[in-house]
Image (cartoon, rainbow, N blue to C red):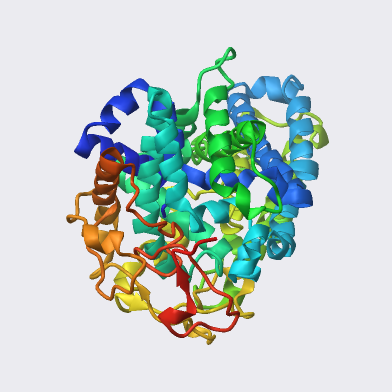
Length: 562
């Protein structure tokens, strides 16, 4: 956290608890406010930063479409159970066989390709900020990292000033301010879970954000995130009701602000223009739709009028043969969060299970032809139930592959089953103190960045990062969704100087403070806070020319003039 859905929750709570001006903006321009609350996160889809690695994005969205095909096939099988005679006579048989065959040859293959290639490509996919955090490399960074780490409030001041006479753009800016507040408060806590800042643990950071996103959404709304349809919150209406169209005025507004604030940095990938903003919005919308428009399948119940021995013996033999090859006896291996090999074994096990499930589905779908239509109604209904159960498990396991690879949000059940050590990490020993040291670079033993680095041995950055005092699992949610404490104005205004005390305010408190400052003086006294919480709670933008592990405050230039 804060992932996109936590930002949605926070902006809702800010409007509910603080009222104006957010309540009116949310009523008049809800899509502007919601898209604003996403902040600069959509910049992760800037095509000039991805380059040839954009092929991974195409594969990813193809897999989203594949998951919908599994759902459609599942529904077809359920329909066939209600029309067994039609299935046996061939009316539904050929379509089911063709679709199951396609599932084996294309869908599963593409999913496995995505998961396995991500292991090879994630190192290449790592943001440049992870390779050279020194200030001289800023122009090579991805835009999302620049927007989070440099001139963050200069950009906010620019869009505040230029939205003064336009209520729709001002609504966007109000949403943007909530993003700033939530990131400043939330990212240091994510960094505690991750064992370091995003630049060192980008993949672990993404996985943990998504797990906590799902957990917080469920606990706050009682709703399954993956079924919430939350993508509709940024569905700007267009001519086609099914296709959102981001306002041209908003695209130009953002592009102009990027140019004004960042042009002198000579960013290698160029300045995003209005068309780039439009394209990033389209991709981001598709990503949100894929994450929150997944119809969760109900585990099918077996037919009551069936006995195993009603099946022909040769069919039972085929079942027993394929079941004998079931990987791990159908059980997922336990994830030891401190063992790099454990994560990899878990993902490999999932992919083996997927391939086996596809084999089972094909075997069942082809039985009617092999049986020469001699099947009775009850055995046929049983076979269709087994096929629907196989598709159910195939869908569920497919999503878990994507979750473990860091691509999508888990369901609440997957969080409870596979990742309880993350959502309950506050009950263990993760928050070892209010101040903690992070590793300087990712330890080479951290396979795919999924293991907490604290016990693996690495050079640590000093001084210790500042984290809010007395953080516990019971207060974690309140820091983001409840009034917590008054903001210490002097702490923020003087954040460029060494301040040893830990702050005591939450995201809603900070949002309230920010809007008052911006309404009062355009936010001119607020320093450029680091949105990634890279050095802890309330640190500012910083640069350093020292590639070695940092040891003192003097290793950093805070609030740099760059």
